[in-house]
Length: 155
View 1 (cartoon, rainbow, N blue to C red):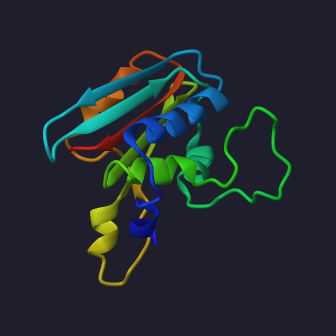
View 2: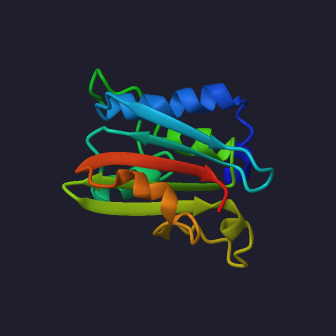
C-alpha cells in the first residue's frame, strides 16, 4: 500500500507545499527548507517554529490515515485525511524522519520503506529515533523549546 501511495502524482513543489501546510497548521511563523543534492544520498529538511508535538501527537501524525474526513475539524486545520505528511514525503523519498520538540522534550519517529519492504512478515514498523547518521539534521532544534524538523531521504 505504501508503495502505491508514492505514486499519487506529487511534484517536489506540491510535496513541499503539503508539508509546509502542516507547519502552518502548527502555528509556525518561520519555515526553513534545506536541500542537499547528492544522488541516492540526497535529502531535504524542513524545520518550523510551530508548537511542536509530544510523543502521542507525533505517533498520531505518523500513522497512515489517522483522520476521519467526516469528523469536525478546526477551521485552521489544512489536513483532511491524515495522509499528507506521509504521502508527500514518500513521493520524494524512501525514508521519513520527524523529530519534534515541545517544552525541551524531543520526540522522534521515522518510516523507512526499505525496512517495510524487507520484513518477511510484512509488518508495519514505525521506527523510534533518528536514522543513524542523521543526527545533525535534528540538531537544528538546538536551544528551541518547540518546533519540528522533518527529513526526507538520505542517511
